[in-house]
Image (cartoon, rainbow, N blue to C red; front, side, top):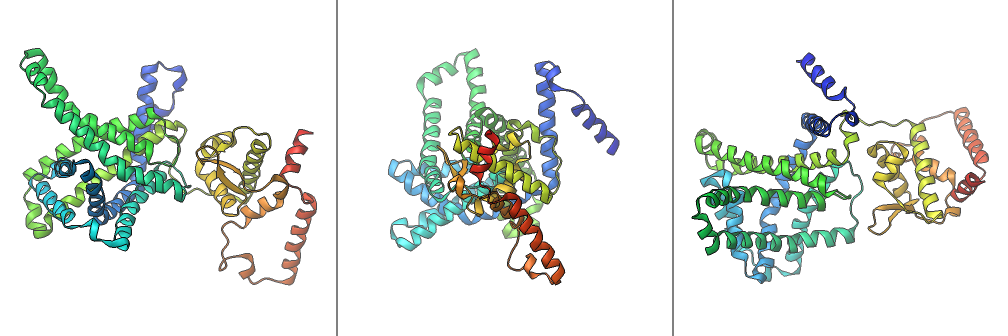
Length: 440
């Protein structure tokens, strides 16, 4: 098996894609992405995130539907929630209809108008926590360690909660109106067109799922996702979701042992398994979109990322220099992706350093969309030694720091002399001094 994997690996990576025909390069690139997805699944982190989202979904599903029910009721389309749930849970067969009845019963029993201020706040908090958990899972897939600020979360999450259901049910209504129109029914009677319309009708569910997944891949990650990459992830995950649903429905229909084993819990177990598969497919599509947009990550092997002290210090100095120089010269500010490519370092490695600078208040987020790095103070007030000290002390805690180590006077004197020598060498140099020195 090891020899087979080695042969496959060599076949995928021995070619320079720029020298191959477009069709062959595209095929090899897709196979490389597939190999990276298998690697991620074997690592177990995607499955762990999917299981976490199953638990959060079970807690938040009814509150989410209650809020959506209240919004849709204002548009007079609240009765469409049940058909949507039936469609989503159709792979569960008759159990899906039973679960839908339970959920709709819970939603109907929630009286949003009589919850009170505290009850309504808890309801919204539960819904927001679900979306926040989803964002964290997607950010993990996209190797993003920075999250939206409070204002961005409120506006983005509110748009998903309030506008999302309206758009979904509007699309479903338009699709239903078209499929039931007299013109379409008359065209169906014509032999060639009837077959074509039947095929299109079967493809519509795939198209709706692909569109929904593509929209999620663009909106949820806290970064700019190219439409083409999101579409590739949406197409693959959408087809996989519909196909898995068909296979899962066949399994539920032909298997009766689960009822004998789990008895009254059988419905809950089947529902949890389907939720897990759905989240795993959604996260897999996000991973596909990530690798499509960042092909340089495909070749990376899963490993614990470690940085030496020298590498941390140099990365911090280079990053602060680039950020300060663009601010000083009034040029385009650096976002995380572009800065990592400029320095030629892994995005996760840069995030470890940038997070230390952000927490120390040396760097802040700014720009048009609040996703770029800018100095938090004027450049003459940021000392170079402060930047170095920040990354040197980034992971220290009150319980684990140099001060907690039993030492001798000679060692303490040596460390003090080293600090004094570094201070004399830098001579209170600021970022502004460093930029102007480079110019001269």
